[in-house]
Amino acid sequence: EIDATIARFDERGIADPLIGSVHDPIYQGAGPLGMAGVPQPKPGAVTKAHGGVLFIDEIGELHPIQMNKLLKVLEDRKVFLESAYYSSEDTNIPRHIHDIFEKGLPADFRLIGATTRTPDEIPPAIRSRCLEIYFKPLSSEDIGEIIQKAVKKIEFEIDELSINTIKKYANNGRESVNIIQMAAGLATSEKRKRIEARDVEWVINSGQYSPRPEKKISPVAQVGLAYGLAVYGPNMGTLLEIESTAIETDKGQGTLLVTGVVDEEEMGGSSHRLKRRGTARGSVDNVMTVLRKYLNIDPRDYDIHLNFPGGIPIDGPSAGVTIAVSIYSSIKGILVDNHIAMTGELSVRGYVKPVGGIVPKIEAARRAGAKTVIIPKENWQDIFKTLDINIIAVDRIEEVIEHVVHPYGINVRTNTVSV
Image 1 (tube, rainbow, N blue to C red):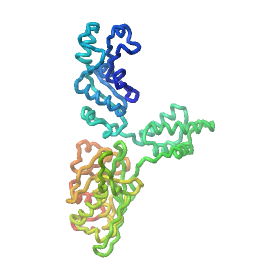
Image 2 (image 1 turned 90 degrees about the vertical axis):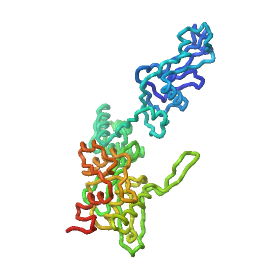
Image 3 (image 1 turned 180 degrees about the horizontal axis):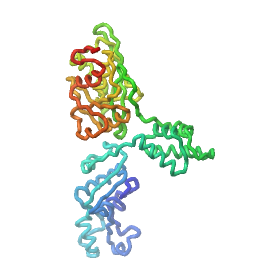
Image 4 (image 1 turned 90 degrees about the horizontal axis):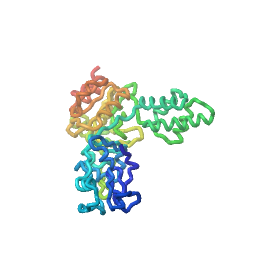
């Protein structure tokens, strides 16, 4: 095991705890072999792990030079060391040192690396040689368990209100423990052994913590309100509210106002950057086309205001079906089933296309209180049959509309309401 944050190395090869180095005879501490002018190879962690497992903590912090050396070792399964003081013809050098310089040190191992960096920050060459495993983000229940254990360890007491407040703001175990420590310090200053809500609130306000974006399904069905699903941060899912209103106007004179989405995004590296229209904004245009072509609704006859509440800029194509349901509901004046959440990109031909992050999205829907999740047919996995939430896979937007608004009496085929 080696910690990449402290695995310092010298570009001259004098010291490298990961790959290995050579102690040249001119440096202090060379011993008797140094007196004879013999360079001494020092095996690194890759050689010590030969035949076993090498665990590199915070592998994303490795210096690019070390990363390249590690790639070479993974390819050759050996470490070749160099020294200006080595000569294959020098008879003073022991045979085993000759073998090391000529044949290399063995380094055949299984590499396991851990990092908090995002995948795009890790060199593709390293990622291609590893199986990527993503840890499940901590839920509110997990945070609650960490809080209870932290309070027990410092021999304090805490009320339920304080626990719920911390669960609302702490994104991980470290943040929750930090809040507990600070709140306990405030309680200690007042000679108390019980952490109160005011202590926690002071810490949160002083630290400017932002609440976790966790929302709950509304207890009542509403017109124009549909629930989508999104992914943020380290593959964490969240419920996404999408609301709209539609006011009938003169034929063909309607307007469209969209708020809460990213209108423009940048792509590319430091040397070459491109700007394009936000993909969420593009999804709205797709919905307008589908409403006219396949759902017999002309949105140009209405003043439509589509809003993504919450204050978090939304981008990505996966809200397409949710946008369509929301606007359809507003124009028809029909309630949307409030127990259904959905995700899927909508094509201009009315097909529901696959999206990413399906598993965390389903988990977010379950936490939010949804009973059913609608997903693209191409995202279906057999493991979904074992979940305690109903998963419906669809291929067309008409199927989505039937599942979400048909229970309230609308016939999608004829656009009539049954009484």
